[in-house]
Image 1 (cartoon, rainbow, N blue to C red):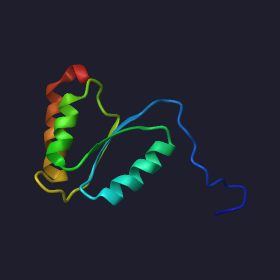
Image 2 (image 1 turned 45 degrees about the horizontal axis):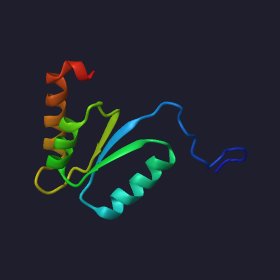
Image 3 (image 1 turned 180 degrees about the vertical axis):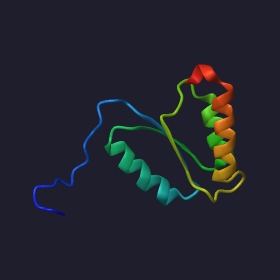
Length: 94
């Protein structure tokens, strides 16, 4: 790291809501820890179907969604397409 640069995480003033979908408990734990340190509200899912259900159940839309591409039941590719379709069909969410 260059001299004068800080290695600390800057906490953002805005409250962000993130959906984090991954079937690996260790990866979920690591990503949750990092995002939590930044002050991000985190909702976790264990597969694409679970992620889609969490999107549909949420009163507030997610600011960003992180999907593992290789998950059981529904992979990240299919989940992304269905989530996009869901958000496009619910204009009041945006």
